[in-house]
Length: 149
Image 1: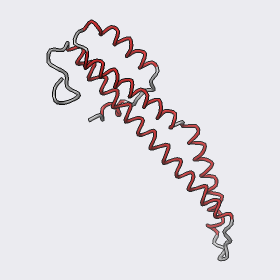
Image 2 (image 1 turned 90 degrees about the horizontal axis):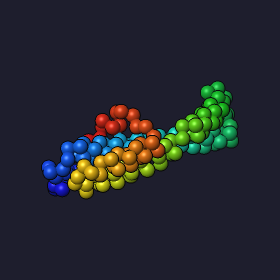
Image 3 (image 1 turned 60 degrees about the horizontal axis):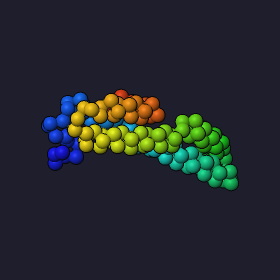
Image 4 (image 1 turned 180 degrees about the vertical axis):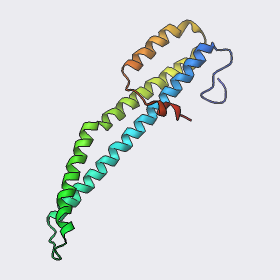
C-alpha cells in the first residue's frame, strides 16, 4: 500500500480498486449522515429544553406592567416545547445516527478487506457482503456521498 492509507498498489485488479473507492465513499457518506443526525438531535433537544424551561419560569412570573405580549409568551413557549418534543420523537434522529454510524463502520471494514485483497477471486464473496451491508443500512442522500473530501 502507498504512503496514503486510502491508496492501493498499482498491481491490484481495477475492479477491486473501484470497489475500494466506492466503499470509502459510502463510509464517509454514512459518517457525514451520522454527524448531521446527531447535530439535529442535539439542536432540537436543546431548543425544546430551553422553551420548556422558559415556559415554566414564565408560569411564576407576574406581569405588573400588564404587557400583553408577556401574557402570550408562556403558552407560546409551552406549545413550542410540546411541538419540539413531538418532532424529536417522530424524526428519530438518534436512531438514524446509530444506523449510519454502524453502516460506516461496516463499510470501513469492507474497505480494509479490499485493501488486503490482491486477487479478483474474492470479489464475489465481497460483493455478497456488500449487499448484506447495503440491505441493513439507511439511505444516504446523494449530496452526502458527494461531499466526502
